[in-house]
Length: 205
Length: 201
Ligand SMILES: [Zn+2]
Picture 1: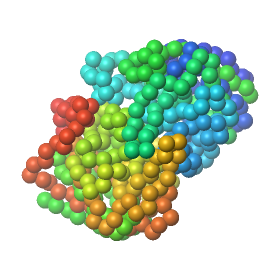
Picture 2 (picture 1 turned 90 degrees about the vertical axis):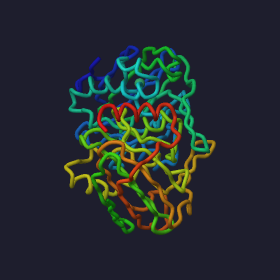
Picture 3 (picture 1 turned 120 degrees about the horizontal axis):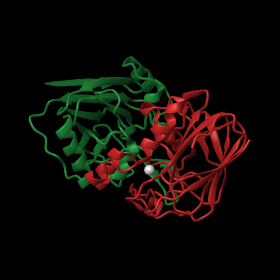
């Protein structure tokens, strides 16, 4: 599904494994609803007027001294510009360390048999192309609703989500944004509860 | 063959490294930090921190890990290190030394990806907040990587972004060893190495 800059407001469902490219004007609110629970929503943010000014997971983590994102988290760019703020969150925390699945990383993690399964970075490329977002422009994303605990001894695990049907996260755009979404099709780990499901996008602007 | 380059603190450098060569970074003083970006010789495939971490179930870089690319290739293997924790969650200061160094090779902002901050530790609390650990690295600490394919490697010695201590320089020694052995590796890391050797190394 594609939403153009002329859309006023938004109410749409993104099927499991599908994606979206949404333009959100400065001040606009975008709500992502986890309709059935335990779905990972891989999301990237770009300054709509300069896609090199894009979301930076590790600048965001460092500046806020926090590994997880939740209400109040400011999403920063590689230039440390504020792209958006999480202004509402009924889930509690969201991952930005785990990145997006790809065919190639599936092979490394789950074996050769998964090479031709659908994966998030394919969806990013498909929907990003119309905005000039290619492989070089793909960076480390946010995984809304995903639970990737980082432990004090430096371990990393993927766990069953904290989310549940109807939980949502809402962002307020600090500038005109392109939001690139892959509603993750991953079936090899518990981030989607082994069963990818649709999400709803609601927008007010 | 061996080449050594000493970077002072707050400097940046880049070098091509052929497959099979080793890169040893040595801290020249206490509180050194080396922020490192790695790009494959095809100039597009680059270090992917999330893929590297999640396939090896680690939130830090330590010996016995393979550094993996966007395309699931092994870029380099961490053969050994005097430290078992190198930060890779907090990126480099948007200081621009790394960006300038990238620019020399025709890269730009789009290529500023997650980096490894060798010699730095940022501890994670139970509540997942972060705290820089001062004094983690002292003079003489080192880490040795083996290039598993032809690489371009970018290094900045800008002090860690969360540190208020003066930084230190880092010596970079690039050598052609007679022989290297794989350290003990997870199955996923072995798979990345095998695929890389079959395809491109
Ligand atoms: Zn995915």
